[in-house]
Amino acid sequence: MDANNTMKFSVGNEKERQVKEILSIVYGALVEKGYNPISQMVGYIMSGDPTYITSHNSARKLIGRLERDEILDELVKEYVKNL
Image 1 (cartoon, rainbow, N blue to C red):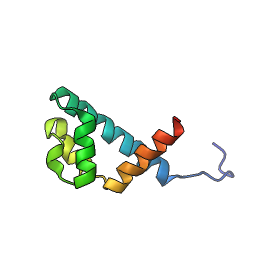
Image 2 (image 1 turned 30 degrees about the vertical axis):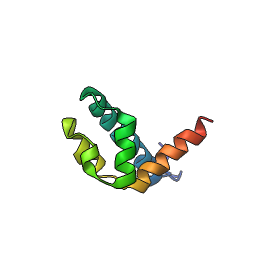
Image 3 (image 1 turned 120 degrees about the vertical axis):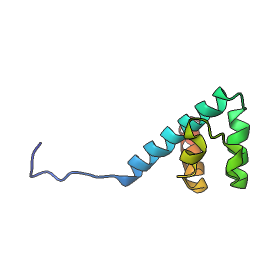
Image 4 (image 1 turned 120 degrees about the horizontal axis):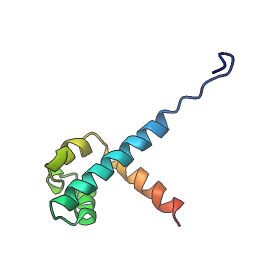
């Protein structure tokens, strides 16, 4: 690494990665418990009620680390990228 070059640090990319990772874990936990993960996650996003998310694999605790607007932001970005 050249000490004369400026390193770029991006907090946004790390946050996006964290949101994706948490959503993946939550999705998997909901599937494992036999829930419809899309319906449950939509219910959580719309209401903010954490009981829509199972506590299995600490999914409820993990999703509680995120703001609902962060979740929506990431979901919309991914949707638009795949149009």
